[in-house]
Amino acid sequence: MWKLASLVVACLLVAPVAQADVVTVTITGQVVGNFENTPPVGDINVGESLTVSFDVDSDNFTEGVPGDTRGYEIDQSSFVMSFSGGVELGLIDPFPVGETPYFTLVEGFPVSDGFFVSTSPFSPGGVPISQDPINFNFDLGYVGETLASLDILDALGTYGFDGLTRFGFNLWKIVPDNVGTEFEFESMTIESAATPVLDASWGEVKAQF
Image (cartoon, rainbow, N blue to C red; front, side, top):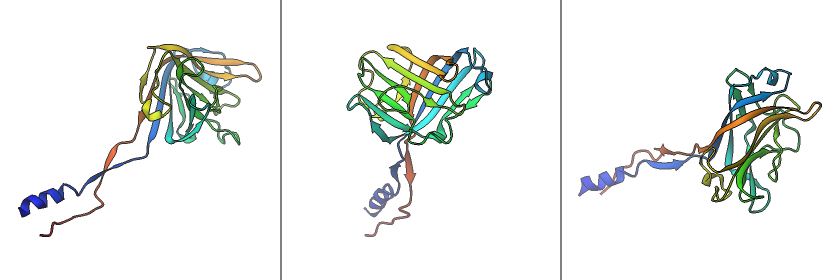
C-alpha cells in the first residue's frame, strides 16, 4: 500500500501551466505589379513572393461595430513584411500618436465574414509602414458563416481561396501620386503559440504514512 500511495503522489509533481494567448497571423502572396519608384518599395520586383507576419494578444482587443467587428491590437515590433528579393518592411516607427494598428475580425458585416488590417476596428483603411506615406492594406472576405465568433481563438486555421468573395492586398501611396504595389493573395494562417508547459516548481513531495 505504501508503494502505491507514493506512486500516486509522484504523479502530482508536474502540472501543466498555460502560456499567454499570443496569436500569430501569417499572410503570403506574390507581387503582380509595382508602380512605386522610391526605394526600398521601389526595389520590389514583379514575381517576388512575400510574407507578412505579426502577433496579437487574444485578450487585447477593441470592439468595433458591436457584434460585427472586433479589432485585435497588433504588436508593432512583431510586424514584418518580407520579400523574396530581400526587401523587408515594418510599421512606421514611432506610430502616429493616437492611432493603433488592428487586425480585425468581421462577422457578417456588411455581407460576409472576413478580416482586415487598419488603424480602425470599424472599417478597412490600412496601416502606415516604414516607408512613409505608404500604407499596407489587407481586406479578406468569405461568403457564409466562416467565423463562429469574434474570438480570434475560434478563428485559428488556414484560409485560402475556398469561399473567397473579395481580397484587397497591396501597398498604396495616396499622396502625392496615388500609386501602388499590388499583391496576389495566396493564404493566411492564424495560429496560437499557447501550449502547455511543465512547471515542476512544487519540488519533491514525499508521502508520509
